[in-house]
Each structure stands twice: as C-alpha cells, then as structure tokens.
Length: 279
Ligand SMILES: Cc1cc2nc3c(=O)[nH]c(=O)nc-3n(C[C@H](O)[C@H](O)[C@H](O)COP(=O)(O)O)c2cc1C
Figure (tube, helix red, strand yellow):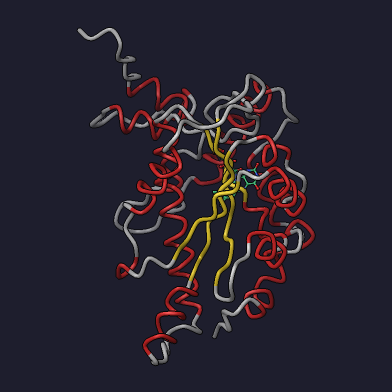
C-alpha cells in the first residue's frame, strides 16, 4: 500500500457531513473525485502565501475544459493580484475582507465582446447578440468554467469562495478591470490557502427528497423536510460559532426585501448600459 496517498473518505461519512446524519441518502458508486466534490466548502479567510507557479494556468485549463454552449466560449476571466485593485473590488463587494486577503482574485466574465469583435472584423451582423438568451448562455458558460476551476483548485489543496457581490456595481467592476462593452463580471472568486480562521466545516444541504424529483415534480412533504433542514443549519451555525441561522430565515432575509439586493435590482438597466441591449 502506498502510504503517501491520503485515504479516500468513506461515502457514508462524506454524505453524513453533506446532509446531516438524519438525512443520509443511500451510498452508490464512489471514488476520490466524488469525495472531493462532497468536501467542498466556501472559505472566507486566507493565508498570504502566493500560489505555486503555473497554478493560474492550470485552473484556467480546467475552466476551459468545461462544456460551453455551441463551443461559443462566451466567457473570460480576469486574474487580479494587485493589492490596490483587490481593495477596489472589495469596496464594490460590501468590503468583504477575504477579497483583499486572498493571493488570487478571479473576475469571471460573461463575454460577448469577443464575438462582437469577430463580427466587426468579418463585416457581418450577429443578429442573435441582443437577446436575453445570449446573455444567459454567456453567464452559464462563465459559471461552468468557474466551477471547474473551483474543483481543480480544491483538488490542489486550495480553497475558494464565489463573490456574487461584484454585481452590486457591475459598471464599477468593469472600470476597475477594464472590461469592454459586452463584457460583464458575473461574479468574482477568491483563491488561496485557507487560514486557521478561515477553516470551516462542510455546510449541509437540503435533503435530496426536496431537490430530486423522479419523473415528475413532487413537493410532497417539503415543509417537514424544510423544518428538518432548518434544525440542521441551525446546529451547523452553532458549531461554527456564527449567528444562529436557519434556511427559512436565510431565504426570507435574502429574498424578502428589494434592499437585500444591494443594487442588483438595477441589473436590466445596467446590462443595457454595458452593451448587452437585451430583448
Ligand atoms: C454565484 C455565487 C455567489 C456567491 N457570492 C458570495 C459572496 O459574495 N460572499 C460570500 O461570502 N459567499 C458567496 N457565495 C458563497 C455561498 O454563500 C456559499 O456557496 C453557500 O453559502 C454554501 O456554502 P458552501 O459553499 O460552503 O457549501 C456565493 C456563491 C455563489 C455560487
């Protein structure tokens, strides 16, 4: 046996962390890749050490290996290490301290500008450009790419956290990282080594019965499952030493009032101003 290889966590153990002991789904096929996926947790505290040389390029190769709608590849990523730029981006994103702490901050961009330039060079009109469908495709592409990078980073012992709060002021983000018209920072991502303070547990998810529907959508029993999940998340927040929270309170807090959108309620107008002209 090669003792240098860390043991793959057992399926039951990983599933129990992901769902809580009372809602563990049956274990099926299992390997170290799935164990890695189930061990994901967002990290909000980083050590200052930089990343090994070539890490950025490896993460981008993983990102570019994601599926992309019609191979259009309508995304880009801006790698930010400059402390001044990170501070400016943190300011846009509600002063989240981990943006300044992490050695690498990535701005993931829904990017139709490249295809606009292609059209200009080829002297053609791309009629499909000004449709919500096109923006959605670009945003999906960026998300799939980013998630591949996240998994790759986590496989290397790095940690990440997505930063949707960049959308609090997308025009400011565009100015900071020099985006052209038709390029929109959909979210950011901190990448680095977790500090002791940043270490955290796997956060439990809704029971599978709530999100998995066999053949047809079925919300039967949802209230009871939600109550059980509320208790699970409350226990999680107690273990983390954070303010006691339940999923129900989180959804209402995040979706109950427009103020919680922190400026993102102006997204349609912002996209229009940033060259998407959606219809
Ligand atoms: C698109 C997106 C945007 C997010 N934005 C933020 C953010 O601005 N700040 C933050 O601390 N976490 C952010 N998160 C992380 C979520 O809060 C986190 O994924 C969720 O609470 C589940 O926790 P886990 O990732 O540790 O399992 C974001 C996640 C996603 C997918």
